[in-house]
Length: 74
Image (cartoon, rainbow, N blue to C red):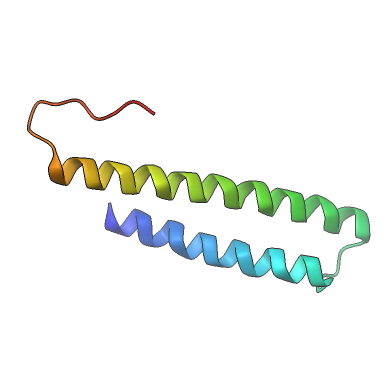
């Protein structure tokens, strides 16, 4: 699970950099496409952050739980 979390953290960093670049206008796209890609990256960043939070909850739960207990529902 650590590898998956590392990949998500890297994706999060890349998305933040790309969002910053799009906000500053560092792109070859016209304004319409720039706005579209900015929205797409912001949406994807929210998804990545949610996945990281879920993964953190599962890791904490699995370290402190008793065997046989089901994980918490999300």
